[in-house]
Length: 488
Ligand code: UN1
Image 1 (cartoon, helix red, strand yellow):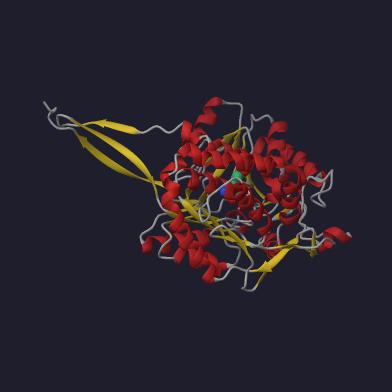
Image 2 (cartoon, helix red, strand yellow):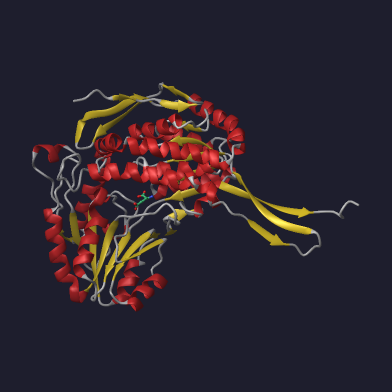
């Protein structure tokens, strides 16, 4: 066992130790192995961080965007240089495979680069005026001090896609990452610090809900961006609304893959496997519902069940591992309980659904890739997000019924549709009510330059990423610019 990393918080440009109750992250494959530990941030640290951000934001906002971008580009290079080691740390602390861990660090670097170059793309709006000698233009200004609250499942990519736009548009940040993944948070903050971010512009506080609630309720925090569960997202949005500040909440999903009779089945099986089981199903965009039209359902399920049974599940840093454990004991419990209640409610487990018996997988937080066919009766597995490698299956008579089933959810984050028929694909675009729709690719995935976020109860506030991010991280001033009579 290696020595755990000592946790530190970044407040006003200083790396400091915590004083509060201990925070400890563990390797979910070997829960007795501690990855990082230290005292949590205190509410005094929170006040100091918000004050530092408030002091720093004016000069940062006045810094030319290209210079702010330079810091993000330098941080991106640091991430790329450390992708091997930090990707391994990610894999050990969160449980996704090494390839996914390294890939995520590189993805975070790409996001920093995208926003680092934002200065080159800024364009504004200018309107004609109904009055002589006047033009009307719209300028953008930062919102101020932004509270950033991030989940465990993308410990470096999601923070990057909130913090990078916050910073490039001239805001200062007070950030609380999930306390299950503090090491990766320290890596990202240290990269931005080493890249030359002025003191106080980014503050990192590691801790539990006291710090999260403290950020959301703090009178000097001007906006809050959050990714995580629907319950917490709604609470944050309502607290922010009561304080009169904007909130952006990316929340749950119960994302469907719809496979129609005419689909390329090999491709669909491969993509559904990726959507359901990559990152151990712990993505808000993961495929957790599968809707099959009758004619292909048996064939599709045979192939899928074979593939699920053959997936190599084990130590996430192992060379051949295709799926690691879930993140924590409580996640493990929620998921196994969800599988059990599906059984009790009359569902048929086609793959997985059993605990492992070998030493590593019985003690780590492992769940087998699980495929469960539901009958026509109501089932919690159809409606509740489990956030694990569990796929609920239902059959549909035809495409219309399949699309209706896809919409049969209070969530509307993403969906995948598999068909070779353009007319059907366009019907899906029109009728499937989601924020992100994939035709012939898995339901997960997001590019930095396009909007990301959900419909229905999956999202609140402006979308993330691409030009959409500017809506949240800036506010506009409409300027009526009138000249006078020329001086003689
Ligand atoms: C992806 O699908 O690659 O928490 C990104 C989540 C989402 C991000 C998904 N906000 O899983």
